[in-house]
Amino acid sequence: MRIFSGIQPTGRKHLGNYIGAIAQYVAGQERGEAIYCIVDLHALTVAYDPADLRAGLYDLLAVLLAAGLDPERCVLFRQSDVREHSELTWLLSNVTSYGELSRMTQFKDKAGSARELATAGLFFYPVLMASDVLLYRAQEVPVGDDQRQHVELMRDVAQRFNARFGDTLVVPEHRIPAVGARIMDLQHPQSKMSTTTGSVEGTVYVTDAPAAIEKKLKRAVTDSGDEVRRAVDKPGITNLIEIFAAVRGEAPEEIEAELKDARYGELKSAVAGAVIDYLAPVRERYADLRGDESQLEAILADGAERARSIAGETLADVRERMGVGAPRRDRPLR
Ligand code: TYM
View 1 (cartoon, rainbow, N blue to C red):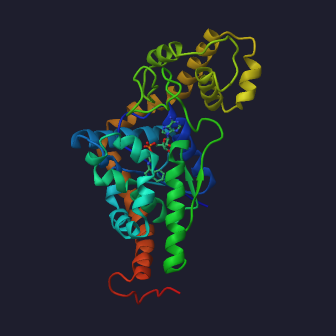
View 2 (tube, rainbow, N blue to C red):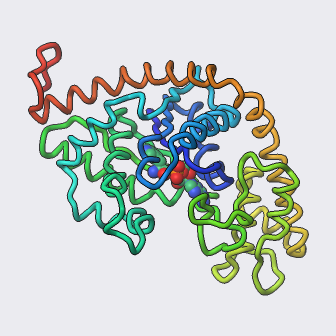
View 3 (cartoon, rainbow, N blue to C red):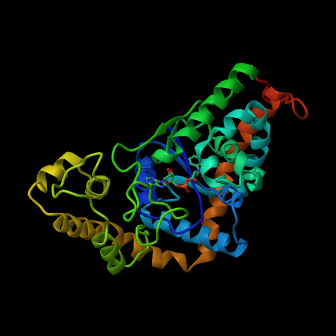
């Protein structure tokens, strides 16, 4: 089983990223050949500062290592180090339609009303993401719920490519966790927790100090009524129950049974304590790892070399199938 996922080096990573994605990456190391990519080229699609991008990349790499990614047990690399991603994006853009890219909800959300001013890169974002996964012929893509549509698109692109040029690419499946696939903002529980669109007070960052985590959870917006149970008209309480279940590794039903007589305040204190315990070891290891940038670069260089050897093979096959470049004589395709 080959597993691939990517994560952007922008903004401070939050509890939604951690529960929805990073915890799954760590688990993936036990289940198969895991490949994880820090997608700095995706980060160019919206306004950014070059120095912040570099710093954010080291921040994220240190968080991933602190969370338990082990470069001995997975391939961990920076997207821009493996140029095959950019080339495959161009090639696959010719089996992707303008119409399907226009329908991507993330493009519509990020471009907003100023659609004319959005970069062409933002429009192409899903093609780059398809290339990320398809280059490694991965079977499984662990992501949060917000990436569902992008994974659907890469499946369509792979199927269309295979139908047009012959069987070359693996059609991947998403792996979206049953609990915690969509962690909501603590202040606006109708919106997902997000560094770009969320509120600072409603977002728990992975490297937040315990006092900050406690404050944010204790001020979390709750709903009318007083019962601790999940319901459509109780988005705040539902979110707190999901967070609690995810960090404790239990089913939400178990949490509801345990807290059926509790008050909202008790729920908030219990969730705060659990999240603090969950993130404390990560924050401590992060502080040790973040300082040594040359060590972080050495990890990325090693990861890139391993990634390139897989990506190079797929790209050569795709070029051959599409009739691009000199014909391959070493390993003719069927
Ligand atoms: P990014 O960097 O925005 O988010 C990284 C991962 O975190 C998940 N996530 C959440 N999960 C639960 N609750 C939330 N509130 C929440 N917010 C974010 C995301 O679903 C994601 O899994 N396009 C991707 C990066 C990417 C990628 C790839 C992913 C590029 N190439 C190839 C998979 C495969 C993104 O922007 O993720």
